[in-house]
Length: 383
Figure (cartoon, rainbow, N blue to C red):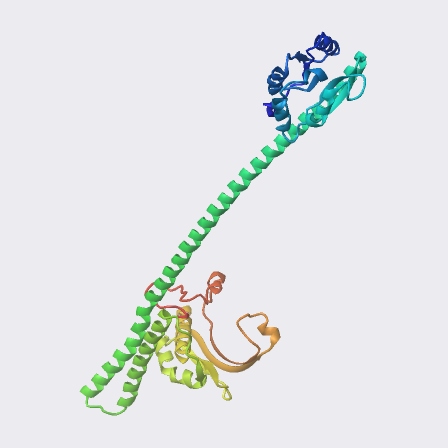
């Protein structure tokens, strides 16, 4: 078909006399290739194989079925505009009735006979120069089409890689999230038994002292032992309540709290939780403001901080539990996204133990994070 033509040959159709042979001879002497067709049908057959231009005499078109030729010319690709040199006789339309086909044939140049060989060669040279530009345009279009196809394939491959990478990242995130959940659950369950054991120790110890005193007939000061056992039982119940709240994703039960009163009430439990080699010093502000907090969570945090301080001082030391009032301005709260400017009550636990490594400090406030071995507590015990 014409769409695959790459030839620069001239197809000659001039069936009257020796015009075809003379034209072919002139072209060959000028270095151009050509082929002679006997009729329009033969011209179309040669044209389907490829051509640089057509050299046609007017009389060759008269009385012929030009529909196949016109179809081939109409179906040319966008880059192609086949040059046609139409040989006419001297004079107007009356002497050249075939000239009316010029508008239908497209890119037509008329050459009157007789003509000088230089004129023919000049026209052919110009026509082939234009044809070569058409071939170059075709090649560029092919290159552009191939480049576009390669780009499209690259984009499709890239999109597929991105989708696969995204799916892998989501899978990894889910695996990591599940791992973190299991780690948190493991830390929680590993410390719950220890915390309950501490509370049961207070209950069992109080009952054991109560039994011994009753066995000896000593009935004085029994209320303090009963109160100590009830307090430990209430703390165990509070721990159970916090676990249920955590499993149901309930918010903190914030209420007005007298922190000094809370710390003093825990004083005996804190003292029993540390070694005799550790000196407990409570520095409580006399004019302390009322704070808004969850008392159960605050008790748990204070107890765990004291136990952590104890573990950090195996050879003894000083442990200070201190309360104070503090006003935080915007300059301070701007550095901490979870704080608003205003008045706060500070409860601090200070010890002179071994301290924490930076890696531990970075995770100190993670839910249920602890460096303790399994079964030795929950660290802060925070959620």
